[in-house]
Length: 154
Image 1 (tube, rainbow, N blue to C red):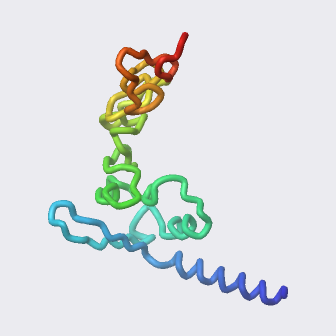
Image 2: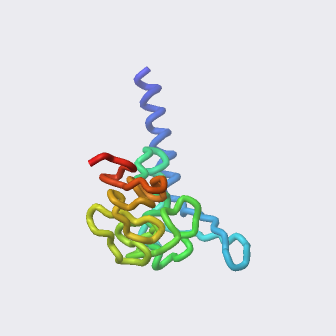
Image 3: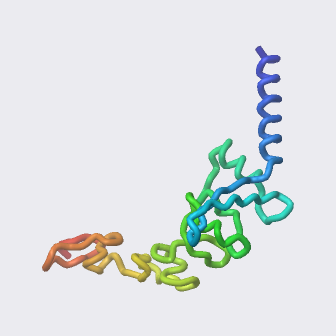
């Protein structure tokens, strides 16, 4: 039994090492021409590695977008790929300027504490009747938004 487990562990380790040494292939859509471009990024030619991709697949340690380690200033198409956090590149990270509190409407525009970014505008969701408690949560006509709740009796 112990010998079987040892062989299994060695085979699994060999598979992970083999997979991490291969370049990462990404197929993206060229929005202007409607064609597919195949972009190959190898470990030596970039600041990220396919080892990161293997780690997230095998160990499930993905902490953000699938392509979060790609440098969008160097590889601008990476923000348009499926799985990206957003289509905008701010400070070398893919973001969505319509919902990112640190880059609301444009790169570097931070929402004040207590506000969140809704459709590219910093909103106080504690009092805004069109975004009460969250983006696009409208209170009915004549009902006020208090403490992020429609019709809260203060």
